[in-house]
Amino acid sequence: MWRGVRFLMLNWRDLRNPLAGGAERVSEAYLRALLARGHEVVWFANTFPGAPREEMLEGLRVVRAGGRFTSWLAARRWARGQESFDLVMDQHHGIPWFAPWWVKGRVVAYIHEVLGPIWSSFYPWPVSAVGRLQERWFLRRYRHTPFWTGCDFTADQLRGLGVNSVTQVSYGIDMEALDDLGEKKLEEPLRLIVVTRLAPNKRVDHVIESLRHLRKEGIQASLKIVGDGQERSRLERQARGLPVEFAGRLAEEEKNAALREAHLQLHASVREGWGLNITEGNAMGTPAVVYPVPGLVESTRDRETGWVAEMETPQSLADGVRAALAVPDEYQRWREAGRDRARDLHWDNVLPAACDQLEAWARDG
Picture 1 (cartoon, rainbow, N blue to C red):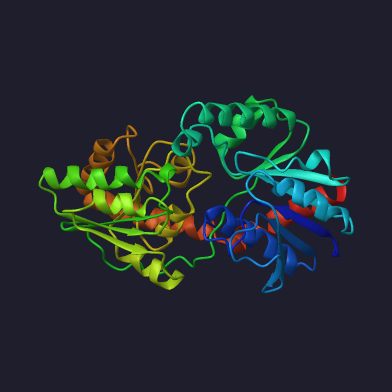
Picture 2: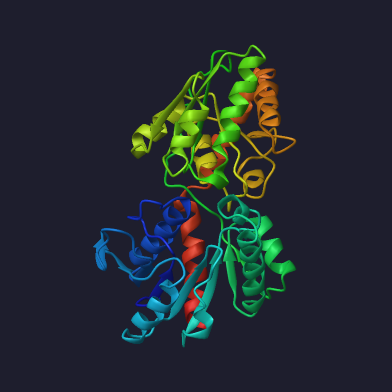
C-alpha cells in the first residue's frame, strides 16, 4: 500500500476554535482517515484568543497563526521552514489561502459552498457586495486548480465560473444510525428542534417565528435550540413568551438524545454545503423541514426523508410542519428512509474513496 505522504490542510478554523462547526468536523474526519493510512498530516488554521501556537490533538498536528485576512501570509511564512508537502488542501470560506501562488507542490481547492448571499448576513452594503465580487473573482482565478466539494449546487456553480476540474466527494457522519427506530407518532404537542450555530446566516430567528405562526394557528408545539453563538441574546429576546428552550452546546450523546426525542428538525439557513445536522437527525429517526436552499435540498429529499418548504419564509416553514402533521403515515416512512440514507453516509462508507482520491492527487496531481 502506498504510504508516507505529507498532507497540509489550510482551514480558517480548527476543532478547538470556539466557532468551529460542520466544516471542521468534516475536515477532521478526512485528516484522521489519512493519518490512519500512515500519512503525515498538518492542519494550519487561524489563531484565536488563548490558543497555543501549535499542539497535537490525538495525533493530529495543528499549527495556528494569523487572522481572518492575514493567515495566508502566516501560512506562507511558516511553510518556508517546512519540508515540502505532497498535497496542500486550500479550504475556501469566502476568502482563499492563495496556495497555488506560493506552494511549490500540488494544490487542491476544497470548498463547501460559494458564500454568495451569506455575505449579506454578516456585512452591510457595500462591504457585502465587495465580498461577493472578490469571492467570484478569486474562484475564477482558481479555474486551473482542481476543486473538491460535496455539494451538487456548489459543483455546478464552480463549473459555471469556469473551473476546469471539480470532483465531488460525499459528506459523512460518524453517528451510528439507529437499528430500531421505536415508535414515535407525529402528534401534538410537537417537539421541534434546531441544531446549529447561532449565527446570522443560520436564520434561527425564522425558526422561532415559524413556531409563533404554528401556535397562532392553534398547533401545540415547543422548540429546543441546540447550539450557541453571537445571536443568542437577540434570539432569547425574540423568543420571550414562547415555549423555546435554549440548550446551548451539548455533548454528542446529549445532542443525539435531543435529536432522537424531537418529532421534526427545522433548518432555515441561507445556504449550506450540505447540512450535517440534518443527516444526523435522520440517523436518530427524526425527519427535517427545511428551506429550499442549496445544501439543504440535498441533505433532505423532499417528501422522502422530510419536507422542503416552498419559500424562504417562517410561514412557509410552519406550513411544512403542518403538512407533515397531516400525513402521519408518511412521517413513519420518512423516518425509515432517512435512517437508511444516514447509514449509507456513515464515514466508514465514505472515507475509503475520499482517501483514495486525495492520495491520487498527491501522487499524480
